[in-house]
Amino acid sequence: MNQGQFLSRLGKAILTLTPAERDDILYDYEEYFSIGIADGKTEEEISASLGSPEQIGKELRAVHYVDAVQDTVQR
Image 1: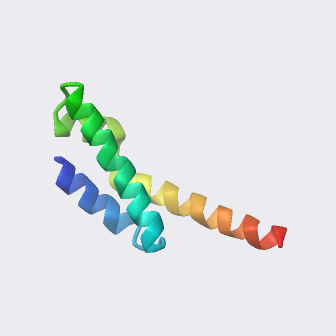
Image 2: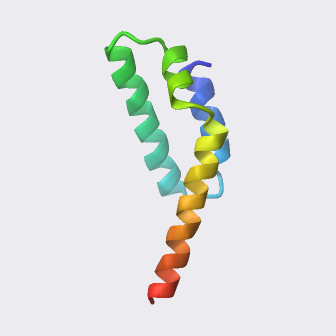
Image 3: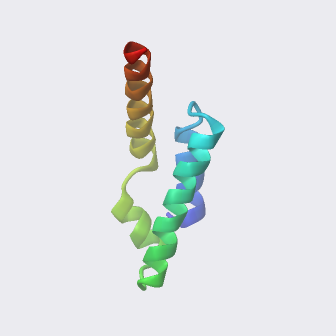
């Protein structure tokens, strides 16, 4: 999958996060692609090395919810 497809699928997978969080995450993954391309990799190689955007989104959502619970407990 190319960069656009990867970022689109990741964006859909993290829709429940805040817009600021989504923007930060998508920016980070755009950077992964930029660095990989600068190193001579194809977009398809980069997306394959990153893994499933849906799985990444699932893990990011889980971390977000754990952090939110910890913030609530600490208050």
